[in-house]
Length: 232
Image 1 (cartoon, rainbow, N blue to C red):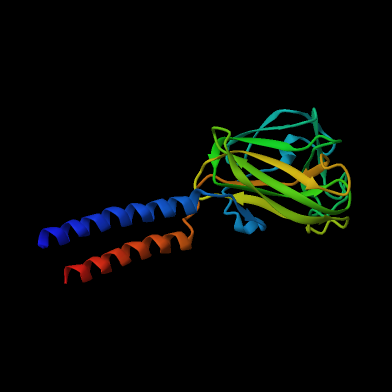
Image 2 (cartoon, one colour):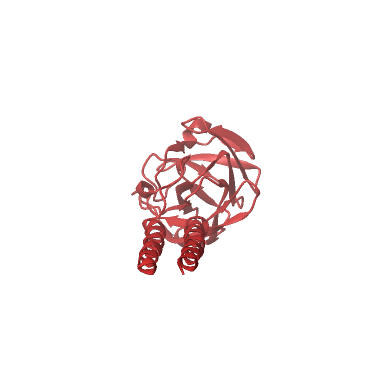
């Protein structure tokens, strides 16, 4: 009888812990989570487009740029030339006054960004060239070019330089985002014409979601309680 109970113990332990691990892994890695506020991205680095030159500078696509922390990035678009703009100058929208912007030019989006090292999160504010409502999309890919998922956000474009341009970003629990695609699903005019401001990103993986940790601990504790009762 003791031998049977011991085997039962091992069977439950052998099933319960791997199951918790699988569920935790699935919860952590299954999707890209929308981040709609810059302060919630957990950024550790950024790219300021002012490094490309003054307002009105044209930049051939593709181009390479280093982040503030020294990470190399490669950017490209459908068109052949990006344009450096400033909010309140060549761009009259709803970014913050003086923001350094990267503008796709005429019918040139989406923008593809390839990171020199994989990241766990990235985000930016975005606005189309034409006023009115729009839908922005953030899509992420890993080093094997596997689509990790995408998120969308609804925004409204207008003048005023009031820093009301929407922030859209994506976050994962692992450092496996190698490439992002920045685009618009819809807009009042050409969806290929838009600007983004500073690109923030995180090079450190985020802490596992509380719900996932709770699930793992709960399953482990439940298994232990069951085993104690079984032993009695």
